Length: 106
Length: 149
Image 1 (cartoon, rainbow over the protein chains, first blue to last red):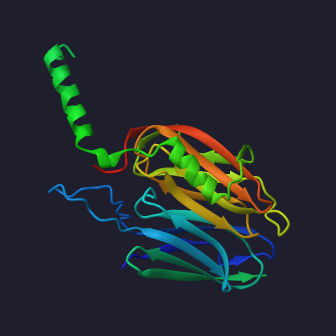
Image 2 (image 1 turned 135 degrees about the vertical axis):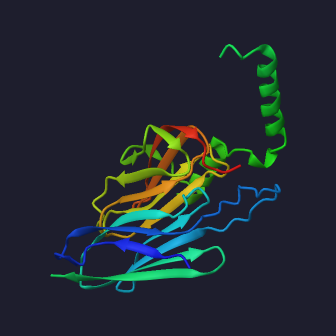
Image 3 (image 1 turned 180 degrees about the vertical axis):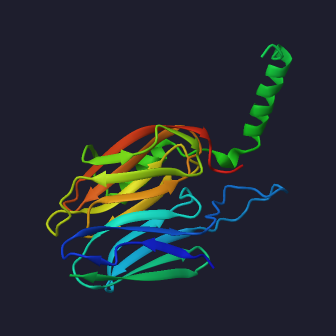
């Protein structure tokens, strides 16, 4: 099971813009490679990444085979209210890997 | 290099040609296909140069992990924000790298790491909330390609 890792501040001033840095361990098998017998290795990538802030979708991304293994993605949000930022990574095989972080807005 | 005579050179060229002949499925994406893809993603808008910046290394020694950051000039308010940024590498087997979708929050900047198969131009196209589209293109030299063999 891939493990997501997220770095973002635990507290922020109201209106402050903060960065969220995310990564997850995943091979992102591109579908371009062949095994040692010359057979193509089927594609298996995370094709979608979504972010909600207190349940509202604030950022999302669609990924192709050209995204590197152990995909890294960082982006910025505005601290509007205390709550939870939740991230979900959607795998080609239908699995969804999720994690969330709390933020206190003063 | 004194070992390099006509015979070894010809053998090398022959091997290269044979390798290309047996790998037609690795045909690379071309600019026209990439243009077509971008046009669909930005609802047919004509991208103008400007507003978008891409930070890339000049030379990527390893095409497997090439970091990039795309920034767009935008206040990111309800009245005016970046709806999407599309990153395209038309020298790869498939041109698409990633599409990022925004709401009026934070700032219009995103970072990621991508695979590049060879030396090529990387393009970032931004679609704004007013329907206009802006772009930037930058060449990057790739020493060892990152699309597997």
